[in-house]
Length: 423
Image (cartoon, rainbow, N blue to C red; front, top):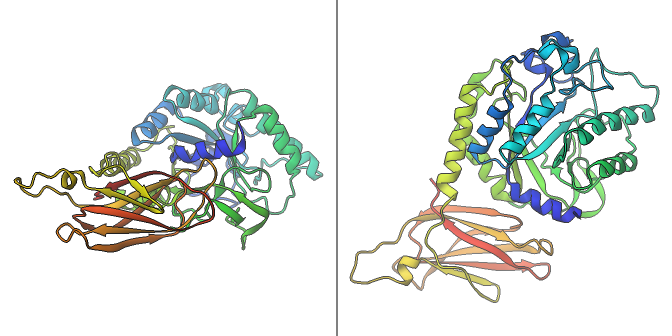
């Protein structure tokens, strides 16, 4: 499968769940790069149930899931032959357990795309020392090789750039090895490695309303002070990651659980601005998702379905040059002897056909008034459309919508236009 097709499929996934789970789940209060020792003996999730994680994600409407196979602390959730800091060195299942196996199997059972996170950088007492960069890259390739050859098809490999600022990886060699092992895999990484998916540049879950898919620079690390300039402009979808609490891993901080309103806003400003939304939940020391986090995630899924599953009854868009119009079907076929039936709307969702690349650079949305049917007012102006853009405005009874494409860089096509009343 070519890279562009994989990227378009990724945008169709839209909503994923990130699971940060590992040695940190048993050491509340620890933070990235804090240097505090976390002995492996503490890792013992006696109620581990990856099916609970994935069935919850499925119920919430997620289409993919990602698990932290190895975070910055270096602890591996599988029995890695290249580390003395893994599940094999713990009392859990007498050192014979494999969280990755249970996670991958659960994803396949519930038909979610399988994603694995791997941090190339690591710190702490159990860090393996290397005398040169090649040795470090060998270690990197060997561990990734275990993940990509022992668990069947992996759909998505997520590399964290944080902590790697001081090491120059042999990118071409690493990418070539990954491609040999999993030729259809999609990768989240520094785009100078390979064109896949890039980080939106914040961990708050938001993308700008103007969110182009063709980019010439990207953010790639929380620790970097400026964007990275790319050698050329490329097609590169973005992903918006965010935490359901204020930490990635489970901690004693239930009071920081975000509200359904805030999470719904993240969805609308990530998926609704043409990117994917990746929401993190940290399974606890039992190996289960905390009850209140589950309730909040399911409430988010319910809110998304209630608002965006069923569009309002407008006619299919009619194209005339660069103008698309759609009438409220209750008005178009109205029996004037019956009471007025038009419903409120406050949102237009537009999708661009990206088969031949994005092209639309500016658009406007006009609404025709319910009684003065020849009068239209400007409701919304935007720039990029891409995979999907959610355009919200104040509620009104609109007899007809008009979407005008003001500027485009080449041939374009609109895939879909729908109207909603979002509460």
